[in-house]
Image 1 (cartoon, rainbow, N blue to C red):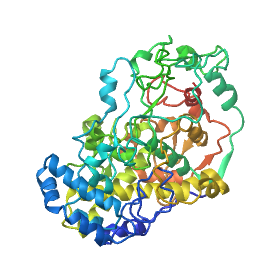
Image 2: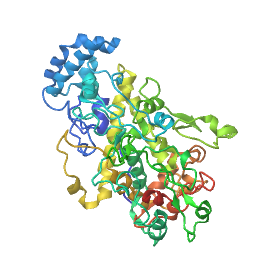
Image 3: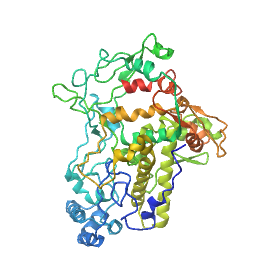
Image 4: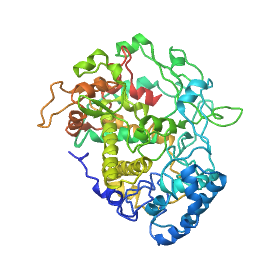
Amino acid sequence: MLFLRPVHYFFLINTVIYGQEFNGGGYAINGQFGEGNWQTQRLGGQHGQFRGGNWQNGLNQAQSGRSEVNTLTSQGGGANHRQAASNSCDQILKNPSSAIEQLIKGRLINPIEDNSQRYTLYAADFARTNKSGCFPQLIADSAVCSQALCYHLAYRSIDGVCNNLARPTLGASFRAYMRYLPADYSDGFSEPAGSGRRPMAREASRLVLAKGTPFIHDQINSMFMQLGQLVAQDMTKAAHQPVDPCSSCAPLVGKCMPVPISEQDNNTIFRQKGCLKVSRSASVCGTGDQQQGKPREQLNENTAFVDGSTIYGSNAKDFLKVRDGRTGFLKMSNFNRMMVLPFDASSCGAATNRGTCAAATFVTGDTRVNMFIGLSSLYTIFVREHNRISRELQSLNRAWSGDRLFQETRKIVGAEIQAVLYNEFVPLMLGPSAERLIGPYNGYDQNVDPTVANEFTAAAFRFGHGTIVEQYSRLMENGQSIPAGPFPLNEGTFKSQKLLSEGGIDPVLRGFWNTPIKRPQQITAAVTEHLFSAYVKHGTKDRKNTNGQ
């Protein structure tokens, strides 16, 4: 079976670990440093700033303002020093060079993101305080980028602002999804299309999507499905209403749209509940209002870029939760002699002393990490990878600060995710037409809008739900099943403690490598009838019903 193979990424980290200048060799998380060839432009990659040309010219220009910049970076500086740094880096931008190593050594680039001069957003704050249920969009202009130009030439901001220096919010978090086609609301502005024109979502799921014989794809394994979920969460996260208002089967205008259950439905639990409760995605403030004449739009909490935001976060608060102080490392916990994602060990209860855990909730840059243990396993892989690379860099670059270590490692991990996505996942997803559909990477284009489309996140990329199978094996190194055995899909949802008490992530990943996906023409009952049933008593869901609604 194809995908995913264990991959060695030495070619990606060579340019940093051995002190070489950033002028070649495929190290291009932002499309910045090197001739990356995995379509970073399509992922909204930033400009090729320090590539080609004579780096010494750029360095000489930068050094003219060095004394002022040193004051800025070491003491915090004031408006004059900030402007001096901006002017120096503006000159570098006009004459691209490969001198980033010398620029950082000369303190012309501070590896600490400075958000003091701009507005930032955090979803949880609005979920708690905003009774209207709408979310504001993040706002920034080009002046924001010039205030911290040195940083933005070298590193990504955590929320994606200033990836495009001319249009800073393109691809940033807390921005509305784009649309290929106009919105189609029943009232033209906010209300979903009525059932008078379409069958109920549950009926479509039950009678159409769940019918037929499943066909196994024996050439592609389940890591294809699992990486697809990771990438989807890296690029998209719809801002949702608080769940409390949707506790009954009564619709709540603008917030809740429950799906009635037919008496002919074979799912007894669904019939007893009377409906499937669905909370609508939050609207962007100022949309969905007939008086303002703007159809309802939805908000993406994550950056649109494939940048590892699942582990680093898409806002400053989540970022601080996962970083280990001012070191170059991400936080991890040690349990059963395994390095695992951070969690509150007190939640394990008395079972902790016996090496087991009754319940665990992992913490990463994305709250959906606990949704499925296969997903949690991939998150763990990349957090471990970050810390492994950071240790390598630290041993070879003793003078680097924790901030420098962290930012350089973050670039490499993001590049690894992009490399796997474009070298392995996309060719399998699109088939022989992949190269023709995507085309070659021809350099950064500031006119490309990387914003994720509503149609992509709400419909097209959800084809992956059709590749899910009923059961996943867990294997030892010899290929035999572990004593705990395989697990059905619903027993792997919101059951992170299984990774602590039942052998860790290795058996899960081996099982995924050896479990073929299902072809997506038909949806398994694990998705339409039993999803999350092991997580909440009588709390089963129909994922395709939610998609359809």
